[in-house]
Image (tube, rainbow, N blue to C red):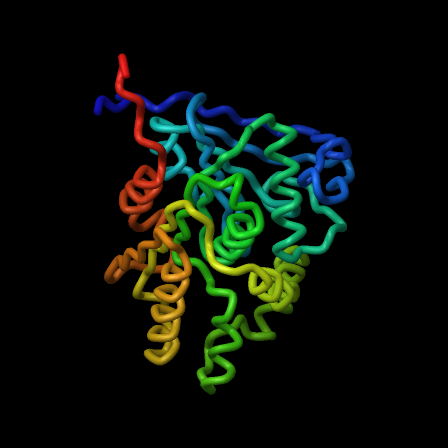
Length: 271
């Protein structure tokens, strides 16, 4: 296979997107959002669209290195959720269901057609999990980069393990959009739990091992992400020993390879 030797130029847009005309799907009421500015950064111009979702507190930028490399093989779509980066906030709830609806409407407004490869980090991994399970017909593959499992907080509490949540004293200092996402996460977990396993597409769950948790919490994190990979018919858990939570920055090459691994094989000329 011959790979492109240079990265396609980055397309940076800061646009007002009128989403009122976009529908989440034909069986549901239209997804209606107020006109607002959305920060979108794309690499690559052709092929499958790889959609990146960031974790709590992050705009699109932690994905920059990975997205650049993926852009040599596909169209890499990164964006900043409402209230992050240069994207305007929204009054809509910040649970997973609404975040996925907003993202699907944005992709439609950008005329980026499915099926997608979905890539999510940390809390963004939970959002992409819901996307994939709720809309399997729109998904070609999933790569979850050290995602926060929907049941991690509850399982920690039940096991009496401390240090698994953001302390209230820290939450009080966070921007409102982050507080809203944290407070909505129980509801997000319920929404994800309403669906079964993943669809008939490959799922890779990349797992870090150096989170700074107490040993019991680290073992629980590893166990839950293993179980998450097992929910997929074509699931794979990739443990990256000694790496911290931000795998897309610390171990970018591993993340890129996982994404390329779920992309469709390139067509052989003449076939």
